[in-house]
View 1 (cartoon, rainbow, N blue to C red):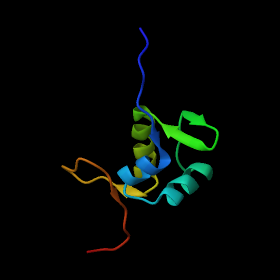
View 2: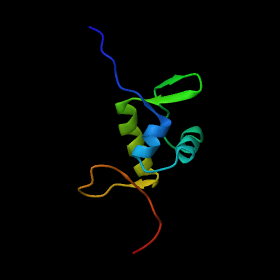
View 3: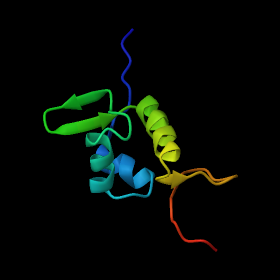
View 4: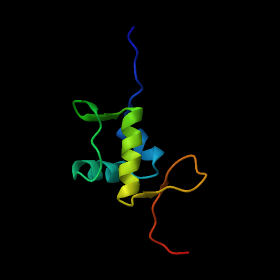
Length: 81
């Protein structure tokens, strides 16, 4: 039986993580975070598993900070309250 897996564009993923598409593209191209496992000419496509790995990478490099009880990631800020 053949099943399809949802794929997300870099724009959809960057919005999910609260960052600009260009920032996420830069982090991927510079090698700071994991590359998506799928692509078509001119497009990076992310699976659900890719977004989980990407989130971990973004947390590890300090781009996003997880909040206890939060259902999603938030963008990292360097301001001290």
